[in-house]
Length: 415
Image 1 (cartoon, rainbow, N blue to C red):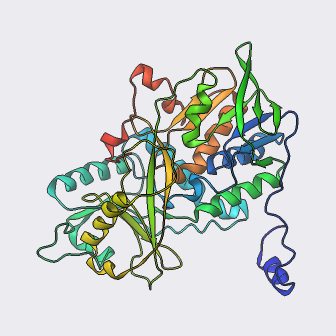
Image 2 (cartoon, rainbow, N blue to C red; image 1 turned 90 degrees about the vertical axis):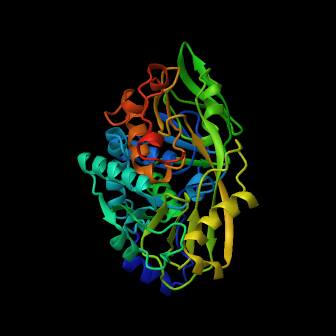
Image 3 (cartoon, one colour; image 1 turned 180 degrees about the vertical axis):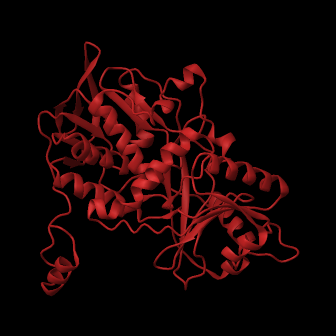
């Protein structure tokens, strides 16, 4: 069924009792042209672009849990491409451009809101960093510019600009095309579109082993039985190192918990995405009026998708330093997602060990914003057996050659 105003009105008159399933609940077949492990945004997008762009419909997505239950549904929904290195800009701006047409393409409203993003500075040193990044963005052809204190304060009128404020705005970097999207809608939209093109989406399917014969992947063993394929994509975020280890590949990835918080809904008070360099805290306001708040990593390696009070205190103290008036708000919920972090804070895209196995992992906190690009590039590699020009710099061999793309140093991201 195509979603439209007509179908919405018709189903409303029928009491909303006849909507079809968004995607079919598939059972595994004996063999596929390609198998993707991980039913998050990247895995689902990969399946969709394999079918749409490369004409492969005998494709399966294997998800251990349920669609939208992993990191795709556990983030702060920010989309941006304000990075430092040309390789990173090419990658993240491809994603942003695809996001800009995604609702129409998928016939599914992902609620993209390009309200702009301000990276705020509070010291002369931070302003110098902002100046450098803004120059890099313009040289790389991305919309971005430096803001002075007056313009930045106008963007966030409730920010504490009192004479004794610890983090008074001095200015920052502005990207007008940045914004937010509905995270679970992105997963559901890709799942629905892929399913309509013949992709099998198999939930509750745990990959227990990877079968390799004569140096080439030939299938996987799962709790639902063996599945044969000679093209395997690994897009399972923090679970990818364990999967790669099954074929003898050790990935330079550590997993950490990243927590986020949502306040009670209030009237519109913040119409941009805001990141404070001084505190590492970032926030935006949802369409329902809730404040969606994030901060730095909990630097204790873990696979636990849960929060803790010390991290909560650190993030929320940053919010209150910037916005003392927010102290009246009540938190509705808190969650933790697992992020896969590599030494240079850039993703890993490319072949891994046995022929036919390709990686899409190591996104750290950049995974959600990169979903359309990550799916496009992994689909290209699975279909052609070779890199796309944009994915080649992110090959695993950069940790052997030393050609790192160090966005931690370049754009100041912490993870």
